[in-house]
Length: 176
View (cartoon, rainbow, N blue to C red):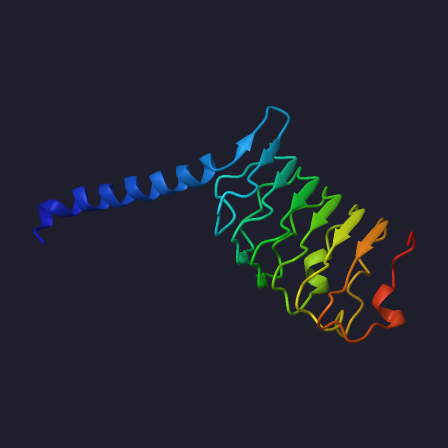
């Protein structure tokens, strides 16, 4: 390719990628109070461009497979996160780290085969957690919920493969 065409090629790629990003962001409808609805929009990933203005985010009933460390990092004022009924099989260790105001988290009916306590380590004000209907067989080797002192509602288990539960699984839960 001639050298003179490189700048045009680069701009074309940038414009196309920006259009893709705006398409994803436009798949959400957000009201002025920060409530964003992305339910049932055939999304396969968490939309980019989310900001601190988002207080409630509903991405349930989509085709999301992965929650990355950076997907929600700007959503520092998020109080409600609904990710139920997706295809999520991977949640990176720090995916929820910046969500220190999160009170409600729904990860139900996904494909999570392992649960990690690191997901919850900064969610001190979380009051509701739904993990129903995933593929995990146990709640893990360590106390999964030890960083959730305010948790009041916990939904765990599945109908097919949940095999064991131990007293240590609920260490740190004072309101249940």
